[in-house]
Amino acid sequence: MQLENFGQNQTLQPSAAYTPADEAEVLRILDRHRGQQVRAIGRLHSWSDAILADGVLLDLRRLNAVEFGSEGDQLVATVGAGCQIKRLLKELGSKGATLPSLGLITVQTVAGAISTGTHGSGRHSMSHYVVGVRLARYDSVGGKAVIEEVSEGLALEAARCSLGSLGIILSVRIRCREQYMVEEHFREYPLLSDVLQAQDSFPIQQFYLIPWRWSFLAQHRRETDAARSWHASLYRAYWLVVMDYGLHLLILFLVRWAGIRSLVRITFRSLVSIFVVRNWRVADRSSSMLVMRHDAFRHIEIELFVRRNRLGDALRYAQEVLQVAGGTETALSAENQARVAALGMQEDLAGFHNKHCHHYPICVRRVLPDDTLISMASGAGEDWYAVSFISYVRPNKRAGFLRFAEFMAGSMSRLFEARPHWGKVCPLDPEELRSLYPRFDDFRSTCSTFDPNGVFQNRWTAALLDSDAGMGVSHT
Ligand SMILES: Cc1cc2nc3c(=O)[nH]c(=O)nc-3n(C[C@H](O)[C@H](O)[C@H](O)COP(=O)(O)OP(=O)(O)OC[C@H]3O[C@@H](n4cnc5c(N)ncnc54)[C@H](O)[C@@H]3O)c2cc1C
Image (cartoon, rainbow, N blue to C red; front, side, top):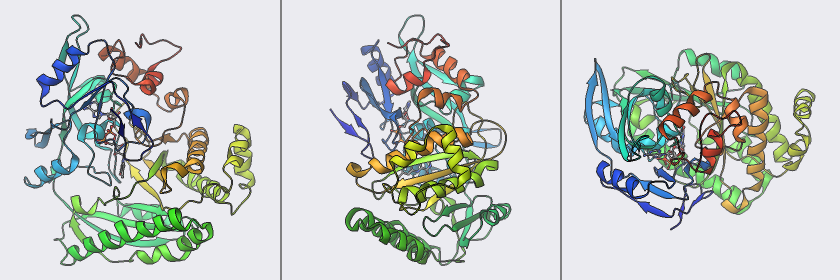
C-alpha cells in the first residue's frame, strides 16, 4: 500500500493500514501489533516528515463523533480524532457556536490540526484551546493497549501539540465560543509600520507582502456586532471566482505553462493587486470569512514564525533573499551579506541564485503565544508572526524552491530564532529544531513517559526525541 500527501512531496508505505470504527477496535489493533511502530494520520495535509509511517498506520476518520458539554460557562466540544474541522464547524454552527481559532482551510482532522500547531491570525493556535485529549497507548507495566485521559499539567501541554508522539489520539476536548461576525476590507500600504499600527483597530487582520511589488496588502479584520452585510454573498462569490480560482489559475498558468520569469514579476508588480478590491467593507460569519479554498490547487509551503520585534528585519531579509533567488539581484545588502557570511552560508545562497522566482503573496499572520510545550507559538512573551512562502511549480520542478526553503529555515532560525511550522516544509536538523524550543526537554520526557519504547515514533520524530544527553528514550 502506498499513500501520498496533499503536496505530493511525501510517500507513506505502511506495512499494515487500518480504519478502525471505534476505540475498542483501536485497542485491538494496538494489541495485535504490540512491539511494532504505529502512527496515525489525519487527511495528510502536512508537508513535513511528521506524517511518515512505515509500520502500522491508523486512519481515524471513522472516529468523528461530536458532543457538547461545558466547563463553567465555557462551551467545550468533545470531538472524535478523525473529525474534519468543516464537520465540527457545521455541528457548532447548529448550536450558534464556532472555534476560537481557524486556519485557512477546514479539511484537516481535529487531531491532525492540533498535532502540528495549526493556526489562523490574531488568536492563539488551535492547540492552545485544547482542554483534554483521550489517548490510546501501551500500559508500561502489562504492555497492553490502554486508554488514558490527559487533562492537566505537563502532559496536557505536551498533548496539545505532540506530532503524533504521545500515542494515538482518540478524541479531543476543545474550547469553543459563540459564533461571531467578522468585518473585513483590504488596503495597500508601502510601509510595514503602518500595517502593524492598524492592528490595534483590526486585531485579527492578516497581511501579504506582494513579491516584485514589495508593498503590503492588509486584509483588515475585526469582530463586529453588525449584521451580515446584504452583499456578503456577492463578496463570497467574488472570493471564490476571482481569488480562489481566478488568481490561482493565473499563477498556475504563469509558473507551470508559460514559465517566463519576467512575466511573473510584471504580473505581480502590476496585475495581481487589480484582483483585490480595496475598501469593500463586508461583515459575514467568522467561519465563512476566515477561510478560503486554499486547497483547490496543489502546492508546497514553508512557514517561519518570528517574534514581533524581529518581524521587520526578517521581512527585509526575506525580500533580499527572494530578489537573489529570482535573479534580479546578485547579492544581498552589505549588512545581510555579512550575516550570511558569518553563518558560512554564502555558497548555499549562491546555489539557488536565479533558480526560484517567487510567485505567491507572502502571507503574514499574527499568532498569540500558546500554552503548549512545542507548538510554534509556544512560550510567553511577544506575539509571533508566521511568514509563509508558497510554491505552485510542479512537484518534479521544486528543486529551486526547496533549496530556497532550506536556506531560509537554516539562516532565519539562527538570525531571528525563526521556528518552522511542524506541518509544513521543515528542513532543519533535529538539534537545530530542539534548540528553538526552551521546553523541548519537558516534551521529550513526557513522550518518554507515555511511550518509553518509542513505538509511536517515525524516523523523523525518533531523531527529534533522541538526544546525546539521553533522556531515557530508547527507540526500537
Ligand atoms: C492547503 C493547505 C492549507 C493549510 N493552511 C494552514 C493554515 O492556515 N494554518 C496552519 O497552521 N496550517 C495550515 N496547513 C497545514 C495543516 O493544517 C497541518 O499540516 C495539519 O497538521 C494537517 O492536518 P491533517 O488532518 O491533514 O493531519 P496529517 O497531516 O495527516 O497529520 C499531521 C500530524 O498529526 C498526527 N496525527 C493525525 N491524527 C492523529 C491521531 N489520531 N493521533 C495521533 N497523531 C495524529 C500525524 O501523525 C502527523 O504527525 C495547511 C495545509 C494545506 C495543505
